[in-house]
Image 1 (cartoon, rainbow, N blue to C red):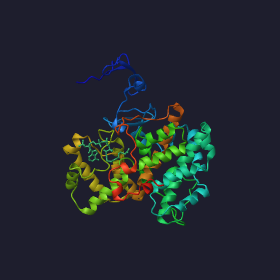
Image 2 (cartoon, rainbow, N blue to C red):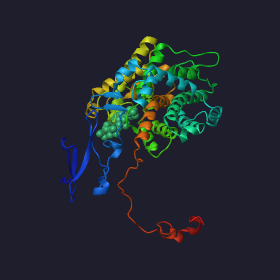
Image 3 (cartoon, protein in one colour):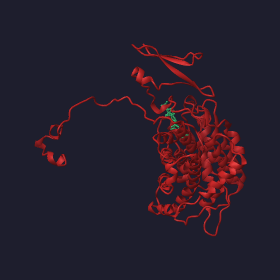
Length: 453
Ligand code: CMC
C-alpha cells in the first residue's frame, strides 16, 4: 500500500507530501525558465524526520543555475541560452569562455581585454616549471594536471586570499591560460622533448597546438581544418551543467575553497572512465576491436551479454542523440575529407553506431553515441596521443568549471553536506582482542603485540 503521496497542483506552486502518521507537509515549487519543476525539500528532515534517497542523484537538483540548459529527451544543449550548434559554427573558444563565465557574449573591448589577460598569464613561473622534474616520465597527464593546478595557486597567494571582481577575472584568466601551458609541458615531458614556451602573438588554440607540436627550429603551424576541428572540440566540451566533475567543483567551492583547489578536484573527478576518461576508453576499445579483427556484430553481442560497456555510448541525461556527438561526427568527417586522411577506427565507429542504433538492447535503453564517441577520433587525427585525451576534455571544461565556481561562490549557498541512510551495525560493545574469534590464547596470540604495546 502506498502511503506516501506527493501532490503538486500547478496553480498553487506548492507540493504537498503525505507521509504515514504525519500531517501534510507543504513544499515550495520552483519553476525554471524552461519550465522545469522541482519541489524544495530543504525543510523536510527538520519537519518530518525523513530525508530523500536518490542513488546517483538522478533526481536531485543540487542548485539553481543560469549557465547551461540541457533537454536530454530532445537532444538540446544551450550555453546561456545560445544553441550549441550556433556557437560551434560562429564563436571562438575564448568568446564562449567569457559567455559562460559572465553570462553575455563579450563586447569587442571585453574580448580584447580577456585575450590580453590570457596572453599575460600564459607563462609558468620557473619555480613551477621545475615541478615537472619530479614526475616520472610514465606519469598520467591527468595526475600531473591536477597536481600542477593546485601547485600553481601557491605562486599567486593574493588570488586565493581575495576573490573580488578584479582578482576573480585575473584568477580565471590565469587558470585558463596556465592549464593549456601545463598540459603542453606535461606532453613534452612525457616525450622527453624540450619544453616549447607559449608565443604571445598566437591565439589561444593556435598557441596550445604550437606548444604541443613545435620543436626547436621546426615551428608547427596547424592547418585551418585542424584548428577548426580543435576549436569545435573545446567549445563543445566547455560546459555540461551538473555533471560529476562540475558538481565536484561546486561542492569543493561550497566549503569556501579557492578556484584553483576546486578545479583541481574537478580534474580528478573528470578522469574516471565513466566521465571524461571515456574518450580515452572509447579509442582504446576501437583499437582493440581493430587489432582483434572481430566483427562489430560479435562485439555488440558481447556488450549485450554485459561483458563490457560500449564506451562513448549512453548518457545519464541524453535519452536521444547527444547533440555534441552530432557536431563532432560531422567535424571529424570534414577533417578527414579535407586533409585526405583515412582512419580505420572511424569505419569501425560508424559500423558500431549503425549496428547499435538498430538493436533492441540499445533502443530500449535509449543508448546513443555521446560526446566521447567521436571526440577521441578527432583528437587522434589532430595528432594528440591517447593518454592526453582526457586532459583535452579538461582544457575544454575549464570555462564551465570557472563559471560554476563563480555562480556557486556568489550564490552565498550553504556548504554541500548530503545525508545518508545508515545501514551498518547498531550499537555494540568493544571486544578485547583475546575475546575475538580465531584469536584464543591457545593459538599463540600475543595480545600485547597485537595491541601495539
Ligand atoms: N554500453 C552498454 N550498456 C549500457 C551502456 C553502455 N555504454 N550504458 C548504459 N548501459 C546499460 C546498463 O547496463 C543498464 O542496463 P540494465 O538496465 O540492463 O541494467 C542501462 O543501460 C542503464 O545504465 P546505467 O548505468 O543505469 O545508466 P547511467 O545513467 O547510470 O550511466 C553512463 C550513464 C554514461 C555512465 C553509462 O551510459 C556508461 O557507462 N557509458 C559508457 C561510458 C561513457 O561513455 N561515459 C561518457 C559519458 S558522456 C561524457 C560526460 O559528460 O561524462
